[in-house]
Length: 214
Image (cartoon, rainbow, N blue to C red; front, side, top):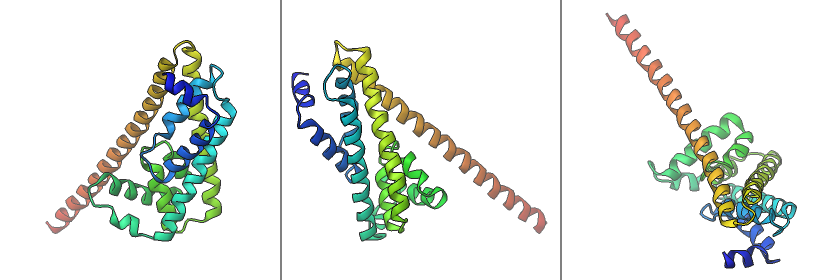
């Protein structure tokens, strides 16, 4: 905790926060959300200022999304084709392609809260040539809402456990995990309903064909 205290209260922390949020946009193994939540926890007790935390996290996320978009635009469909069938990456790209075609830029806002989803969506948008102006608009909304969400989650935990930042971080991360689980549960239920509906329609068609043949 002493190391974390020193790191979070350092003036260089703001630059690190921006860099990690940007990197997470196209390299989704960097724990940017955890870093934003931790910053929010310490902001509640006078550590880094809350407003700069939100601004820099949002700017970093916005920049990272555009890097991912440019990578997708430059490589075309190669990144999508390289994803092996049956893998999580292949499913993420498949989901991204379908949702971008159906809902456009709005899915970019939702995808920022889906593990691995935002990178798949931004790469796919670049690959399919989604209009940059619209992409930037939705990417801005997604980045600001995500930064506010993470920082305020941490701030709530930090305010509740001002004398014990570790508990504040645990509460913030727990709330974020709960939101992620909820989003994934809703997606799972919708997939099941869609699958059942499709199966039902196919079965009905087969039954009709059999009846007609008789």
